[in-house]
Length: 125
Image (tube, rainbow, N blue to C red):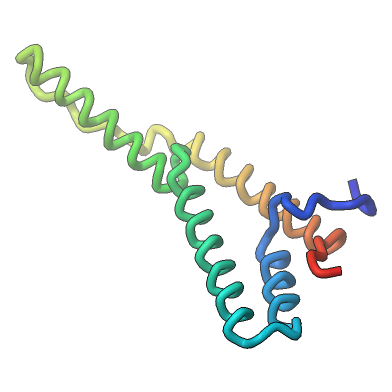
């Protein structure tokens, strides 16, 4: 949907974050206040990327953590019941799923970029 009002609390892409940073830098607030706001914006962006990267999908780090945890559970289970250690988990079998998830993430990123370019959020006006 283009042309309608965007939610100012909705997700932003890199373009939207750049526009927000530009709006903050262009205000007449004292330099320390602008610096604090930009530092907070940068910090919140880093925290959001950290949390997003921990989503348990295989192209992301969270997916690798899940594979490693599954391997650990299998080994612990075998050790508990005194069975021989199982073969390591083969993460390469999940490559088709990884490709699908990567394509979906790229498509969502492109859609968000398009939404930010054609229908930007303006917080100061």
